[in-house]
Length: 366
Image (cartoon, rainbow, N blue to C red):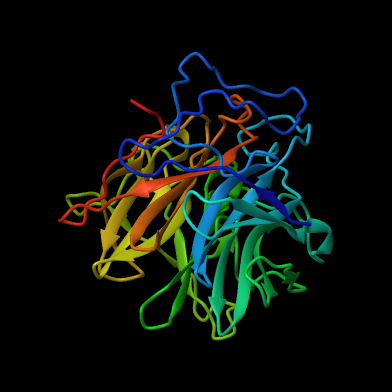
C-alpha cells in the first residue's frame, strides 16, 4: 500500500529553511530511553515522513526520481545497550520523490525479515544499486549464529518489492553496505562498523568470537572500513575484501584513540571533479567526516567534518546529486523527541567550494 505524504516541503535554499523544533504528530511508541532535550534548538529541516520512523538513509537517483533506502525504526521494547540490541528492525520501506520539496511517497514494505531464509535478527542500514534494469538491495543482517552478514535482494522496480537470495554474500561480514558505481561501470561495496557492527572481531577476513573489546585503544591504528569490487551479477564479491586506509593530513594512520576522526560506521563514497570522497560516522563523537583520494580503494586523506552532531546519538548519512545540486541525507530524533532508536530521515543541500572542500553543515538553525 502506498502512502503519500502531501504538503511536506523541505527547505533547502538560502534563507528558506523551515523550523521543526517540536513535531506536531509522530508514530506511537512505548516509553524508552530519551535523550536530554535541554539543548534542543530549532531544526533546519523537517522529517521526510512522519507516519513511520526512518533512519540511515541511502539516497540514489533512479529513473529521474530520488529514491531513499532507509532503515525502519520501531519500538521493539528491547533494552538499550552499547551493541545496539534495541535497534531490532524487521523490514524496509522505500521512499521516493519527484522533486526536492515535493510530496514523498512511502512504497510500503519492500523486504521483510520473515522472507529472508537465513535471517536471525536486526535488519540494519541498507543500500541499493541498479544495473541493466535490475535493482539490487543490499542489507546487513545477523544470521542464525548471531553474526552479521550482508545479503542481497533483487527487483525490477527501484521501490521493490525485493526478493532475497537464499544465502548471504560469500565472505561478507559486519554492516552498513554502501555501493558506489564508478565512471567505468565498475561497482564497489564499502562496509563495516565497530561495536554492534562486529568489525572488531574480524582480522584478515577471519572471525574471532573471543574478541570482547568494542574496538582497539591506545597508540595503535584505528580499525578500518572494508571494500571489494562486485561481481558482474552484482551478487558476490569479485575479489578478496580489502581494508580502506584513512590517513591523517600528515600521511600517518588515524589512531584508535582519535575518536574525533577515526572510522566507526556508515561508509559512503561519492565522486566530485574526479576526486573520490569517502565519508563516514565517528560514532561516539557523532560527526560525519570525510576524506578524499584518487582511487576507489584509497588511501583517503582526512579533510574535515561534513555534518556536526545531530539531535540523537547516531549519525548516518548519504550524499547524492540531483538536478544539478548536491544533497546530504541524514537522520535525527526530533520526531520522537530524543528517543535514540526512533529516528527520522531528513535532507539538506550540500556544497563543495572551488577547491573541492565540503562546507561543514549543522542540523540546527542558528
